[in-house]
Every structure is written in structure tokens, then in C-alpha cells.
Image (tube, rainbow, N blue to C red; front, side):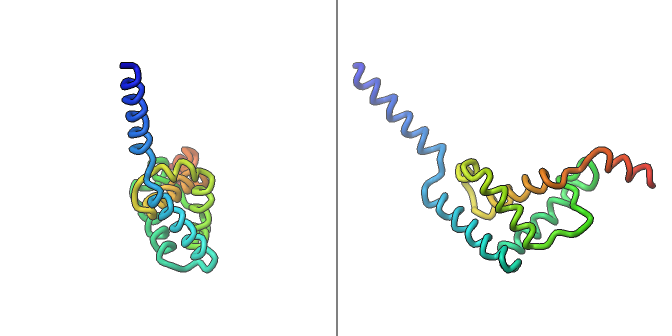
Length: 135
């Protein structure tokens, strides 16, 4: 009886591990997408760069401006190369976490972009208060 209980526990544990980590091919696709983005970042051109520029623009306008905004862009506009670089920096920093996320590789890289934009360009309450008093 004890042997069958141990087998049951081992099988349940194995199933839990399989269900919580994405398949190896999904991890390989994400890593390949990061490599393609890294190549395109060198030139500042490519379909992944265009995708990230569109995502960053959508993030900026999605929630308005001020403290409700997803991020507050700097005065100097970011170009495609910079979007790619901050995405890659965030991806590499949290690679173990990003590898656990299932989904289309560009969706995962877009999450890395969002997190990086929020961290590097937060909207402060002071910024919002200044813009309200100036009007």
C-alpha cells in the first residue's frame, strides 16, 4: 500500500512540474525571438522593433497622462533601438521568470518592455501636480 501511495505522489508531482513550466520548444522560441530582437537592435530596424514601438505608443496612450499613465516618456523621444535595448535588458535581468511565461514570444518581450518603461520612466505625483497648477 505504501508503495502505491509513493507512486501516486511522484506522478502528481511530475504532472505539476510539467503543467507549470512551458515546454522546451516554447522556451527555445522565446530565446530565438530575443536573439532576433538583439540583431535588430544593432540596426534599429526590423519587424520586432516596429512591434515594440507600437506597443510603447499604445502603453503611453492607454491610460491617459499623469499618475494614471502606464509610464511617462522622457522629453527626448525614444527610438526603436532604445526600446529594443531596454526590453532586452529587462528580459535578461528576469530571464528565469520570463521563461516560465507561456505565450507568443513577442507578447513576453512586450511585457518586458512594459516593466522596463514603468521602472525607467515612472509618472510621479509631483509631475501631475505641476501640470495641473500650470493650467
